[in-house]
Amino acid sequence: MIKKAVLPVAGLGTRFLPASKAIPKEMLPIIDKPLVQYAVEEAVNVGINEIVFITSPEKFSIKNHFKKNKEIETKLIKSGKNDLAMAINPEIFSKVSFYYVNQKKQNGLGDAILHAESIIGNSPFAILLPDDLFISKKSCLQQLIDAYALNKSSAIAVNVIDKNNIHKYGVIKPKERTSEIIKIEDIIEKPNAIDAPSDLAVCGRYILNSSIFKHLKSVKPDISDEIQLTDAIKSMLSEEEVYGVLYDR
Ligand code: UTP
Image 1 (cartoon, rainbow, N blue to C red):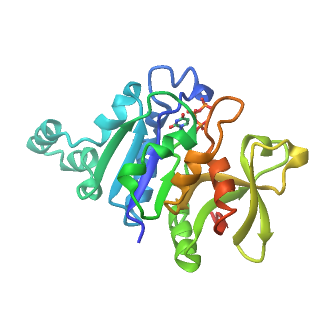
Image 2 (spheres, rainbow, N blue to C red; image 1 turned 135 degrees about the vertical axis):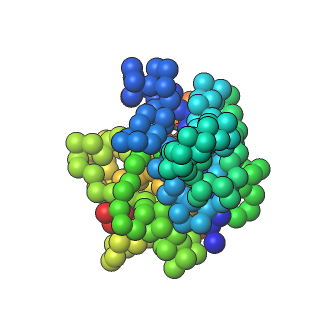
């Protein structure tokens, strides 16, 4: 059973500027909830009860958002607004432990994940990138958990992406593509469209074995001096199987 999830939120969010100048992009509202809450709910709804945020001091509002606020809750209940009291301290979060680890320097997604090692330990775990929002009948994370249960191997969500945008993603080279669960032969971070090994790009949900930490420690930083999670998965492929799961909306 997958019980732990890592949500990296320490990135600078430059693509969302100026909206993300003072407000973390993860806190931008979608209808009535901040973006990050959708990812936390997706994790909790598959049975995850330990959530590790890799964060930075500027993103203090994320911690405040998931902290129980007794004072407002009491006021709301006194004035008969029980539904709002439930909304600010949702019942589903009451059994979840939230951890916050600061990433001092934005050295990339891979470096962010490495910061979770001591809390994750030896079990397989989930990664959710909260700025990728997935809404489907069966959640993207549940689809990965089902694939993990089937193959007992790491599983990463992939989506079909058009040629004009493929260079923005990690792209898998399938070994066998017979169903929506695809054995991966190779994975390449942000290839040129012409070099892309397929049209299947990694999206922001993963179930990984804890062996990923060993690979994160051995991969070299890229030209921007960032440790890429994709490079560590590539290194992992030399020792164990990893599957792509074509996300079914
Ligand atoms: P992105 O590259 O999408 O996020 O990283 P970013 O760095 O915030 O965005 P831009 O490129 O400046 O617009 C994917 C995820 O990894 C986290 C981000 O917060 C995001 O959830 N991340 C990225 C970290 O936690 N630390 C990093 O050093 C880099």
